[in-house]
Amino acid sequence: FEAALQKVASGNGDPGSLSNLPVYVNDCQFGLHGPIEVLSAAAVKTYVERLPECDYLVDEPWGEDKFLDRCMLTLGVTRANDFSLLSETACGEEPAPCGTSDVAFHPFKLAEDYFACWSFAHAFGHGPASPEEEEEDGTSKLLGYGSQEPVYVIGSQGEGS
Image 1 (cartoon, rainbow, N blue to C red):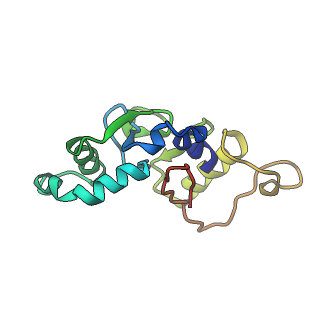
Image 2: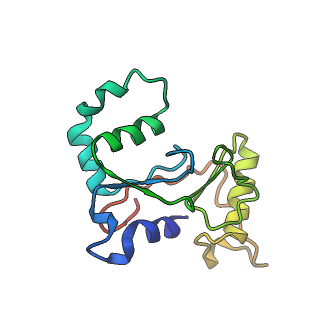
């Protein structure tokens, strides 16, 4: 999924792309949802430097995703809608069986459901399957039970870490 996210975030290396501006991605038609939160380096810098301006939001009964969404709007960070990143039931979608080009699928609360989604996405989705991730018969292999989901910090060049 990293390749799909980097493609969206990097602007294909264009110096005038959104990745060089303070911008964050709204991933759901109902507002930013937390399974994936994508912010440019400039947006993170704005957030860190000006976070006290969002103190008035702390007492709201929201999760971190709505807090982040409202704070970014308060700080004047550009909100870019991209509903192709997340497939989530709370956004009115059915993420299973995880074969679309989305970057993240949610929710999968049971380990077996999560790994079934992960395996299907790598075998049949548009994720970054590579030959070393395939069994001899060409089917996708599950890369280690207990693996953690990758976390990406999107920089001005769209690099993941």
